[in-house]
Length: 173
Image 1 (cartoon, rainbow, N blue to C red):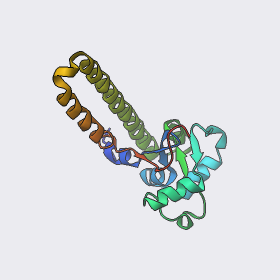
Image 2: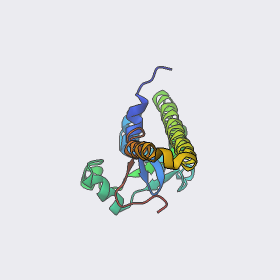
Image 3: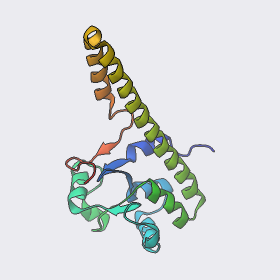
């Protein structure tokens, strides 16, 4: 399948809200080439398909944080409604309520992006564990090398995944 959208573009749209990797309704609507209002109306007609672990509605504080970081426009430009955010499962469920060829193709790309992010995060964890094991074994001889590697890993934590965390909202809240 020819990629309609580079995975990196989708990756940049993924946010972490309340400890969940999510995509906002407005970003999904753009990817699907539908109006945000139409996407949310389809969801509203099928609310049973979107339990809280599939979709969450942002609080006023979360929306204000996104506005302050220029992720979304001022709330008054969103029709006064707080944005919805969809987890990976919620995005998958959207393909059943948005019945178009574009929605199916975009959903496949989004699922691939989530898988890619999981792989990147897992490999980063694996590398950190291996370095820790080596550090325990050779700590006194290579302390400066391990310090440099840790500094590089810390520096690159956000850049390869480009996941944005809402300031002030810690995972698990």
